[in-house]
Picture (tube, helix red, strand yellow):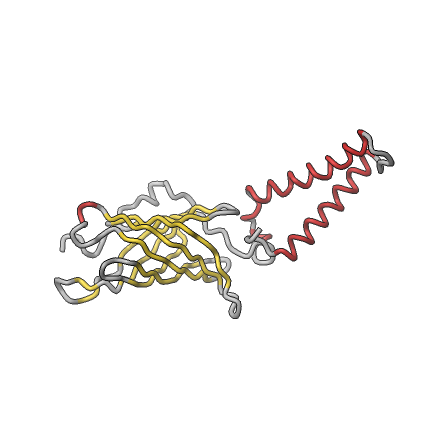
Length: 218
């Protein structure tokens, strides 16, 4: 239940219990003995309320009506298009490379969120994901560790590595993502990330648009 604001969840849970209690009383009356009527009475309450919460945890948690006051984090499902600003220094020029076009593909359920960061040269897959709320400002963040796997064609300058990303969730109706990352390469690299929402389908032709890396043909 860490993805719910517990005070409001308890109020809703209590309200639904009372609602199904009244409904069961209308259907079966108030049982006076431990018998079949008592079983039907109690099972109506438990099954009815359980079905409502199953629907909520499965689908309805994404509805805007719950966002903020009951579900503290927004629905980030879909494909996000943006850039990586790396502090990596190109040894051939002694300068930082240009911004790297990237896609962030997010799959989110009520209990879990996974991320896949794609550039023209590598794929980073997330692990140990979590949402955080800063206690003072109330700012929301998505934090995850990741494993990066470069394409074999660039292995001479890009090694497999692990890292961490911390991404701020900015805005309400029109969300954008901004953050930073760092990794454990032999010569550690860090940088900044920025993404805007692109579309809901991570597998469409639009989402598979070819990305171009600034180091290509250099």
